[in-house]
Amino acid sequence: MADETLEGSLPPVAIPAFSGPLDLLLHLIRVNEVSITDIPIAQITEQYTSYLDAMRELDLDVASDYIALAAELIFIKSRMLLPRVPGEPEQDPRADLAQRLLDYEKFKRSAETLHAIDTLRGGLWPRPETEIPRAEGVEETLEISLFDVIEAFRQATEQYRLAHPPALAIHHLRFSVGDKMIELLERLDQARTMPLLDFLGRMNYRAEAVTTFLACLELIRLGVVRAFQTRPFAEIHASRTELPFTAQQIRDNYSE
Amino acid sequence: MNETSTPVAVVEDVEDARKETSGEKILPAVEAVLFSSPRPVREKDLAELLDATPAAVGEALAGLAARADVADRGVRVEKVAGGWRFVTRPEFDSLLRKFHEVTERSRLSLAALEALAIIAYRQPITMPEIQEIRGVNSSSVLKTLFEKKLITTAGKKAVVGSPFFYKTTSDFLMRFGLNEISELPRPEELDADLTATVEAREIAAPTALATSIHVESDPDLDDEVSDAEAED
Image (cartoon, rainbow over all chains, first blue to last red):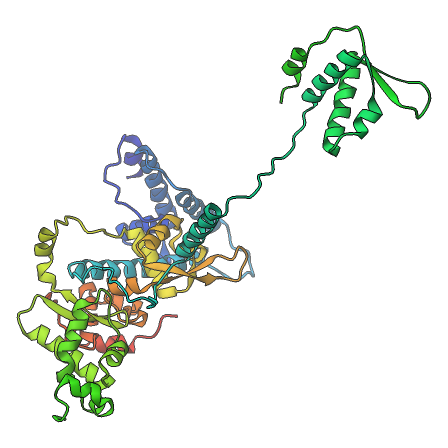
């Protein structure tokens, strides 16, 4: 059976829709007419994996849960091949799986009962739910889910936001090294020299001062600007060198 | 008993009326309320509304059920989700579907029914626990059940990741014709024929509401039901 499945482009039998790996395993146990508590692991594992191959053949998405159970089956199979350690309590490696299958089978049958009831009761028509207008002040008790609460909260915050537009929009001040390099060059082109420490000290924001300082260092590194001091701790002056440099070059290289 | 025969007298002499209102007298009023209500009506609410004793309300409902059952009627009353309501008889399903131009009813997949059964029997239960039993990822089926209002959340479990607890809703009870969750057929009963199980529940219902779908049922099944031990 397994070989046929693998050889043909399509499996010999239509694959029924399984609701999960345990469902497939139960199906194989039933088809082979074996007991859940005494599964012939080698035989069932082979059939199980050939089903997975057939599913892939049909381009069905073989979910990881199916592969996980295949791995478990192979693990059990390998444990059954190992000789028992003398003195250790004898335990069937299939016991856990058998218990899980028995549990699952119980719920699978419950699901079938629910289906039977649902089919039977599907033919009964109750009065459809309608809104009956309530008198003012009558509070209706509703059964609501957590998600209704989340949705209500979302709507409330949205309404609040619309009803309370921000009185004053505050934009973050952003400074860029490139902009400051251009500004420094423009000033130096006009004034030839300028007192750097005094210029930085009159800035309104720390971030602006830092950015300007970095811009200055960059211009010095490029050799476009020269910094000098007459004596230690005195004012540092900046001046333009002879090196040609344009604002466009800065924009090209320092744009964010 | 016959002294307060008019509704006016009922209003004027509440105490006496309460004692003397018989089930037979309030039956039409009960019928009117059930007819107009989109949700099952609780007996307690009927007693309060009609200023009648619980016994009288019970009598009226039993009378209503018996009448709807005996006479050639298109509707019957049933007790679901803790209340009473009118539903049509099953033999008119195809007729009603034709009239309302409904072709296919929304059905639950086998996977969704499995998850629903696990929640129904083990509630409250978390998604990891459901997945452990089913051996497969169950988030999409839970979403379906949620959208159909068959399940809802019931707090969070105090473990790592604090997953939600899930439980069934009153819509679930209505859909599956249960008055309360304890009426779910116990797994032990599942050995019996499925339709017999369904039939047994119909018989076990407090009123003699035999469905028109008659299935051979085991007469001893009711005893087996009560003898069956709770699974958990």
